Amino acid sequence: MGAQVKQALEASREKGEQTALTKETTGRAFQTYKQAFDPRYGGFGKAPKFPMPHSLVFLLMYAKFYENRDALAMATKTLDGLARGGIYDHIGYGFSRYSVDEKFLVPHFEKMLYDNALLALAYTDAFRMTKNARYKKITEEIIKYVLRDMAHPDGGFYSAEDADSEGEEGKFYVWTPKEVKDVLGEQLGTLFCQAYGITGQGNFEGKNIPNQITTHLETIAKKEGFSPAALAEKLETARQSLFQHREKRVRPFRDDKILTAWNGLMIAALAKAGRVFHQASYVQAAEKAVSFIRGNLVQNGRVMVRYRDGEVKNKGFIDEYAFLLWGYMELYASTFAPFYLAEAKKLAGNMIDLFWDGHGGGFFFSGNDDEPLLVRQKESYDGSLPSGNSVAACQLLRLAKLTGDFTLEEKVQQMFQAFSKVIHDDPNAHAMMMQAVMYAQQATKEVVIVMDDETEKAVDFIRHIQENFHPEISFMAVKRREKKKLSKIAPFIEDYAMINGQPTIYVCENFSCNQPTNDFQTARDLLFNK
Image (cartoon, rainbow, N blue to C red; front, side, top):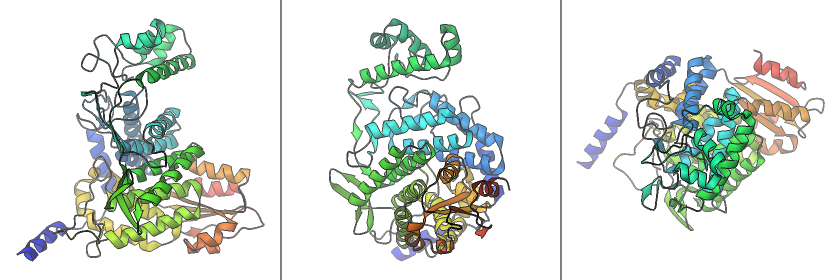
């Protein structure tokens, strides 16, 4: 009887016609977002509203690849709405889980590591796309919050901070005008209340969640006779004083579990922001976190789920492997250290060995070394977190381009086939997988620069690629002394040599290469003017 039930469940899971995933599929996802978009406050649908940063990155990619202004406008309006709302902690930084209202005003005050990691990734990409300094500022503030309040001394990041303190939700975060003025004095206190919507009536149970939803700083500056820069300086002075005062309050409980999957996302966010904003300290924090994971959450080669006070529990699921793979990929892109690419390739191989469905394609949630289950589940839907399968698809495509291992790309095509029916039926519930689909459909470009050391021109060329939003470009910077080590990971590198003893750039499209050049302007023309 048990065997019959298992057979029926497996048949049910695999039922459904396969359908090709095309540009039309991503177009339907975009149209669904467009229909659900809130043009007034940003975001999608009605309250409660979740940030869904992987959906925003889908829209940024859609805008980039298809030159769609509406997609860009929806992404930036939502990022602006999130940053202005009470869902963002304007005093101490970091985002709460979601907003209970349509305005992003009243949050569920709990702060999650994964939300802040994914939002840092989204704001970083938005900056790369738009060069809006506001997005850089928000990214840097998120990271400041995480490094200050969520970091384990030895590396790694804690999971969450509760919504409650002293038995009241949000008590740590809210203010009255009197409290603000007691700290800042009448003049600066009044100015801060104006700028952050703090009133006698209140916006949350008689008190106030600081926000800038209806604030026009330019109008305030003009009215008070300040330049915008002078107003910003005064408000920052006020914020610092209020933050120091708030630190004396009873803090919400911090969940100090260190989860491998969520740390993988934070590592990715730090590494990406580090290279885009030229902040070596961010990359160093990511490297420290990876060292912690490697030292504490990998046992006998098996990635584990959680660590707390020296105790490690549970074999990792697909999310642990896929999200950590993302962290390794971003670290390689930021450091060009062969070690991180080697670890990414090794981790991907282990992930395939443990989780791959050799019959139907895609990754099972649990490993083949776990306790036997009646049916091993296989998920593709994104929730507040993107699914392990969708993150795996995105990162395996990147890894295939960097290593020349196209069996990985074949795996992703098999994933598209395995999940094609559910993706086709509900594409905007697969925002991360849609990123992989779009990437796979593009004419991708591969760039390799081979050099002895970084010259000023080489640094400028590398930074131009890193600072701008070019998801279609796969980029490797190879130090000649590391070439032998790297060629063991990416064998095609063996054929890439320096010419004339100078840094040499190879620009390829789908691995069909132009003549190598020592001239950086020629390389830029090949990349961006075609």
